[in-house]
Image (cartoon, rainbow, N blue to C red; front, side, top):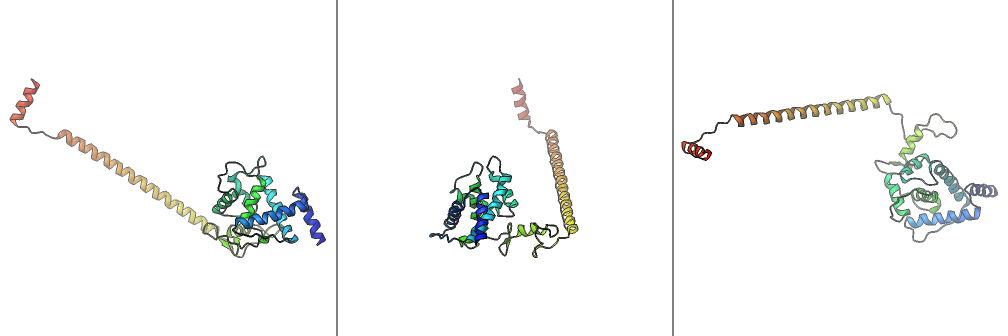
Length: 241
């Protein structure tokens, strides 16, 4: 326990705080998460192991923030890239919902500060110490397999080898035959180009046919013979006089 406490204290110092301040901040974060997810009476039981896990995650996320931020702010459009670098893959709707909740429905027209980004992270990826169930929805665009994002499984599957710091290939992801995939893509593009060419040729044919019909109609109008009666001819002649 003493070793864990000392390690936890070192993490707090790295994050620019003290142990006591970080405990208060940690419990406040748990309370915010619970309230934002509809818990009427939030509870924040303290566990040094859970807090250590939280500090390690926060340290990693803040490192990515410092790397991507400009002027101590992260643009909203950079959030997806930020999450990806943290090896997290929330859907666009989850990010939008988090922004809506954290900023109380107000439109964000500025860069996000580090504490604000951390609140977005822990709203979507609630720490287990909150006691909240994992209610993230699996969708076609962002499927989740056994609580793990499919995009994360795919990213891990592309890791080469099993060196330290790299992930093993997921059992849910198999190698795709690239030659077959490339052939399908090339064939699809060829068919699309052929279809576009036929549509262009047909449009040109239709335009030429319309132009010819219009010219024929104008020529027929010019050749049209007007038959008048003798009485109409006399009236026309008198008008000219």
